[in-house]
Image (cartoon, rainbow, N blue to C red; front, side):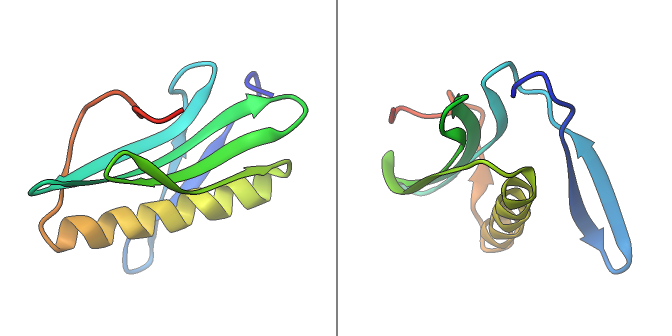
Length: 106
């Protein structure tokens, strides 16, 4: 599954959409991590394996709070869109995107 071309559509503002081709490596196709004071939030989409499909995971303070595996790409697109919206909301309230390893949680 990791060899497939992947695109996500993100609304930039009123009436505009950006199309992103996601190429974060063979196993990771979407990863965002944010920090505010002593707290972190992370949104991750990666391939668990061919049997389970794409792993979709949310973390708070380095703990997994939600994890699922999706086999259809449209579900993955919807999850990434939701993650993009949540990330924008975090930034609007003062959270900062940080460049760290995708997760300390496996």
